Image 1: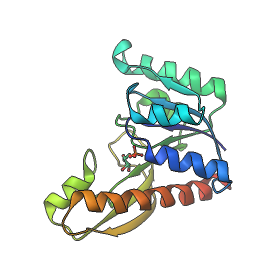
Image 2: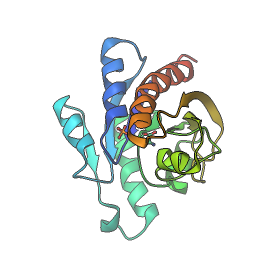
Image 3: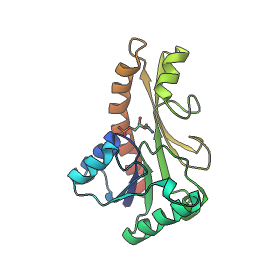
Image 4: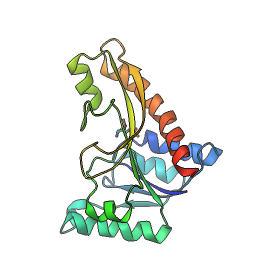
Length: 186
Ligand code: GRF
């Protein structure tokens, strides 16, 4: 499968996916990395592995549709078949949802539908839950609301966000790869 990875932040999930593609652990090829944050660390990681990068500033466009149409042209150029969101901090709009129906996947650091949106790990800690986790789901127009494909529970460590985040990220890297492999083998 030819995949586009969308990311706005550190890009540890991008790195795990990229490594798995290279090792043959994930049956996919990253054809492009899309970011809305040209200064994000994911850009650095993508450069290091010579990935093709598109870094448009949403503000430079007249509308969300125009922004996504520009991205769509890039995706078409490289033949991307799936959009894999990995810390992309923006809702996907109608342009990409229509072009990639049922082919947009996201990973979220909670057991959805609990704690959607930003800082899901912080939200879980603030609520005092003892178990949280990771969800991989199809993307729809809502915030972390699409069909759930896979989930894995993670124990909260010492009521501590940082320690829990470490475990969650390690789980994410495995669960994303495994779930994508199931999708792509069809
Ligand atoms: C991950 O926790 C992911 O679940 C969430 O954003 C974070 C991205 O982390 N959607 P990274 O940039 O891949 O390190």
